[in-house]
Length: 220
Image (cartoon, rainbow, N blue to C red):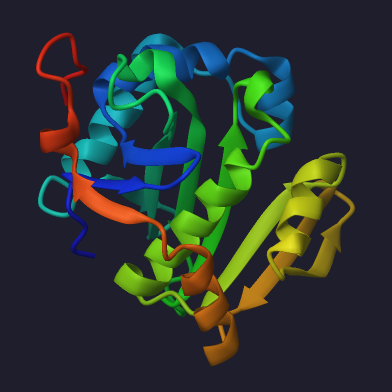
């Protein structure tokens, strides 16, 4: 993939920025939450391990940008989700809301992307931040990565997330009782593509370097 590490996507509620080492402490703090570990099926890592993960993602994609990494033979692209009303203008770490991921792990079908959204800050949940961030990532995947099919794998107890994806036209296709996980899918037909691009026609793509504050900003 050719993805620019200087890319910022600005929406109405959220701004998506590349994942940098300076975001790691806040991200690590989030992932100490047992609730988030359960909802994201994640194991807690030490701060040093989080830095190592971020570094490996960055090194793997120096010429390809964003946080992209090898994962089970595929690639992963992640944006950090910021509150668009607060950034630019305030320090990024204080504006962090969550992250959004696109996993390209099916080596036999590079047009299939698994999308994952985490709104880590409780005060931002249920306010449309996750919906907009997900739509922006999906639009990015369609426009820039050639994605034509999306999947979302969500814990059965995460009813809010399941409901949100269904509102985005995803349909439930499988239930894994062992992992207590629901798989939802959306095929991007011409009609769905038009709808998706209409939903994100307000999004602006800008330069991360140019938008960063001149002083007190997070370094890559």
